[in-house]
Length: 128
Figure 1 (cartoon, one colour):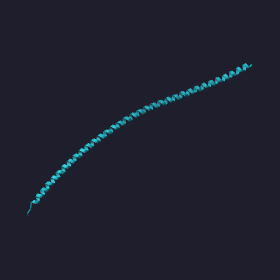
Figure 2 (figure 1 turned 135 degrees about the vertical axis):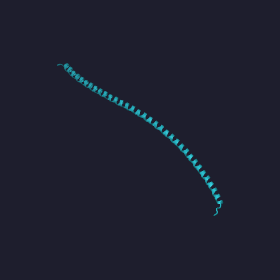
Figure 3 (figure 1 turned 90 degrees about the horizontal axis):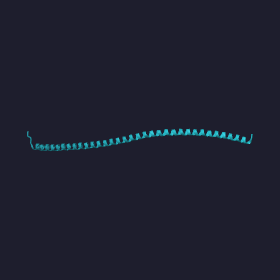
Figure 4 (figure 1 turned 30 degrees about the vertical axis):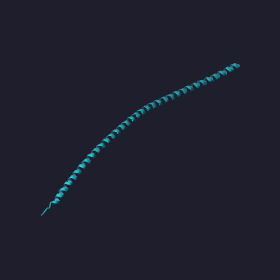
């Protein structure tokens, strides 16, 4: 064989090796692409979960806002009722005071009448 044939043979073997390497690189690349697609799918699924959870969070936040408004209105209502009760208590106390003053005046007037009567009794002399 001539040198040329030997050289061609060597080059053909090198070409075959390089083709095998290229094929191996393609397989690795496709494997990496598959992994990349798999990671992409996992990320998409996680994002979907987060979006759903954020919707749940928004729902919870809106419920909390609604409940806080309800609590606020109930508190205002209780304060109003409490102030009305205090007003009523003040009215009742005033009425009680007036009644007590009227009763005191009557007692004072009655005791004054008794004193006058007792003075009259002092003037009467009883003889046996």
